[in-house]
Amino acid sequence: MSQLQALLNDGLIRTKHVENAAIININERKVCASTSGFYVPPENAINLIYTFYNNLMQVRREGLYFKQKHYKCVRADEDSIYLKNVHGGLIAVKTNAFILIATYKVGMYPSVCVEAVEKL
Image (cartoon, rainbow, N blue to C red; front, side, top):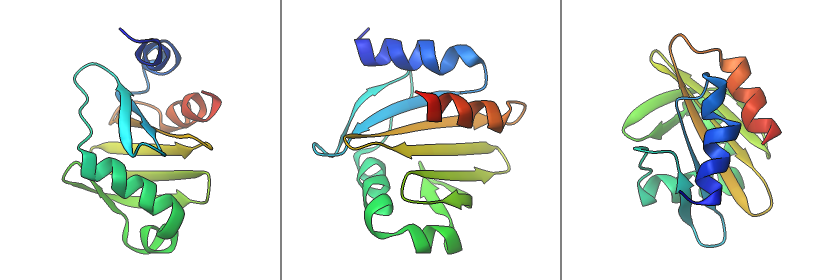
């Protein structure tokens, strides 16, 4: 297990309110680490990068497709995007070099997921 995977597990999964997580390297435009069994297709990684830099207004209005599921936007600004659907939600937080994404499912507390991701 890489250090980044360990960081995702220790900082997010252990909260029991994050189902899956991944780190996208913005410059390389690819996923550099993810939790076990969580695959982020390259087109989804690129779409999230594009969304942060060029597409926030559209995401606010129309939501976002991620891994073939539609999510409605709860909040979107230059640093974070909060999305939800009937099955759970998706949190994306941007730093200078990375985008950290995390999912939660029904029964998990979205606020705990957001806090863990933002803190990490």
